[in-house]
Length: 351
Image (cartoon, rainbow, N blue to C red; front, top):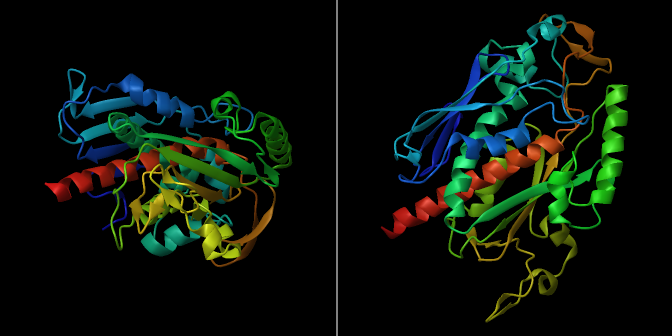
């Protein structure tokens, strides 16, 4: 396997590079007869697209999707759904100065070691541009999940040392960092703008809440629902950590504190994050990811070139000073893919 396909019963294969002609996705396993159109998917694409604010890259990609198969008269046919997004605003010459140098923290070195060749223009397949395909596929999965009563919302919980102190869901899409705390959002924006002016970057934490998943979804061993969510999140380029429920905080708890007592009304606490034994409990699924600082920065750094020589590198071009605001819809998309895939796997098991 080449590692470009995700899922079992609901399978997606993404393709394309940052400065190639297009990126896109092929989706197999879509339920037939579901009403869907390009406008519905475009809503999610608009949340991820670049050039939205002062805290994102100024690259202007409208991320206009084109459904080329799998939909007829506004309904899914059940055959593979093929979606393409054409790249428009590439400036490949921005990378000419560093085409023979390896950017610290980026995949330049590892891609060359694996393939013996790399596309230096905007990082090629290692670019965040690849996630546009995931968001398109996630929008299709989201449409199917809506029919199951499942909703998914992600948001920025922390940027650098600045943490959200309250959860105001309606504020998430009303600030450019997609933070759940409107007051913290103001400080986050100021921090990111300051770092961008200095040519540096920062990371953060994104949290996701999945509601309405019925109990019994997931697999008992290697394909545990939480393991699949972890794999999905860690497949996003900038993600370096995953925790669910109490997460790493569980190490400071006693068993009597971490266990979730049960009653006829359900679980009284949710330290497990909505998944026990790899299978959903019916409670809200809550997880967090750690997003690293953007690798492409304009501050001089020490590195080596393809000839094995020590050199200094300064990365020019257009890059996000913090990836969190635009990774939020990607997190939601990957969560949608995992949940829909496991619903379909459960249905197949029951016959």
